[in-house]
Length: 533
Image (cartoon, rainbow, N blue to C red):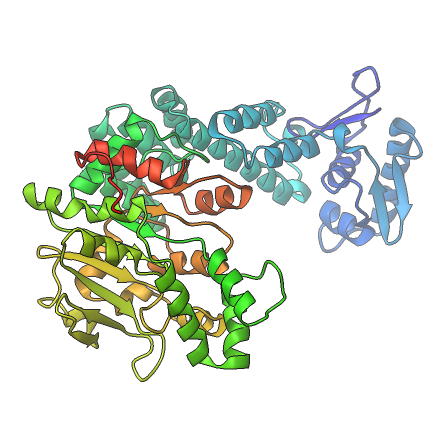
C-alpha cells in the first residue's frame, strides 16, 4: 500500500517505505492539492486557478494533464482517477498522515484528561515539521498550509489543556513560554501559561504574563485582552482560579474541603432538582395518556390541552402533597442555619427547580424562618417573581433593582423557586414562554441576582430525563459559562450527564445524594444528617 505524508515535506512512499520520485515543483504541487482533498473530486478549474492564478496561460491545461500522467507513472494508473469535472486521488485513509492525525484527534475528544493528552501526543507525533515545507514558496498552497498550521497549533493547545487538567503545571511552563514567544498574540496560550504559572506557585509571574499579553495586544492590534483572559486575570488576583475539571471527579477530601470552604465563606449556592419521572407517570395514569416514557412537560401539555390548566394543577398539588416528605438532602440544608449564625455567616440562598415543598417542610421542621422567592407562571404578573416572607405576606417584585431592604440573607435563608409555587412552569408552552426570557436572574431581586453571579454552584438531584431542567440551568447564568468552580452530584453517571456537565465546565461526581451530603455535613461541622420521623 502506498503511503502519503503532508505533515512535513511532501512524501509518497512505496510498499517498502522507500520514497518515490515525485518530479518537479508543479507536479509535486498537483499531488499536494489532490492529497489535501483525498478521495474527493477536485475540479480542473480549481487546479488551474490554484497553480496559475485567475489568468492561466494557454498551455496550462496541457501542463496539468502532463503532471497527472507523470504522477500515474509513479503512483500507478489507478491512483489518480479522471472524474468529471476533474481528478480524484484515491487512497486508503490509513495511508495519509493527515487523515490518521484527524482520526486520532477525534478519538481523544471524550477521554479523561490524562488519556486524552497521551492520545493527542500520539497524533502530534505524526508531524515532521512545517506542513508541505518543501512547497512553501508556492502561492497556490498558501491557504492550505495556513489551515494545517492552525490545525496543528489548536491540537497542541488542546493537548496542553489536557495536561493542565492532569495537574502537570510546572512541567508545562518551559514549553508554554517557548510557544508564547513564537505566538505572542495567541490568547489561549497566554491563558494556559498564566494558569500553569499560578498553579506552580508563581502568582506574580502569572500576573506579569497577563500584563505582557495586554501590552502586545494593544500595541499590535489596538485591542484589549478577551473577556476570558480578563476573567482569568481577575481570578488569579483574587486567588479564586477554578481547579481543572475532569469528566468525573472523585468525592475525596480535597473535594469536600473545597465545597465546605465555599459554603462556609457564603459563596456556595445549592441547586436542588428532582427526578420528575414519578410525577409524569402519575399524571399519565390519572389522565390516560398512553405515550410511555414521555417527560413531564409533554404529559402536562396533554393534560392542559384536553382537561384545562385547573385540573392539571389541582392534580399536581394533590400528588405533591402526598409525597412531600423531606429527604436527607433537604434535612442537611435545613440543619445549617444555626451553624452559620454561630459563625457570624450569612444565611443560604438555595435554588430549587423541584415542584414539591420538601425543602420548605424541612426548614419548618427545624424551626427555621425563611423567605421564598417564586417565579410567577400565570396571570397578570407572569414573568415576574414574588416574595413570600415568614408571616405569609406575598409581594410581587416589580422593580428587582430596588428590591433590597425587603430581603436579606443576613436575616434568613432564602429559597428561590425557579418553577413557581402555586402555578408551576410545567407544560411545554410554559417553558416556551419561560425560556423566552434571556436571563431569569434579571427578574429576581438584585441581591439574589448578585449572589447567583458570584457563587459556586452545587447541583444535586439533576437527572437528565427532563430537557426542561437543562434549559433552566442555562437561564441561571444567561447562557454564559459559570464564573466559579461548580459541582454536580448524581447517583449514577450516564453518558448524557457526563457530556452535559462537561460542556458547562462543571465537575461531575458519582455518589448517592444522601451519602454525599452526610459526608459533606462532617466537613462543615454539622454532623451526620438525622432523619426526622
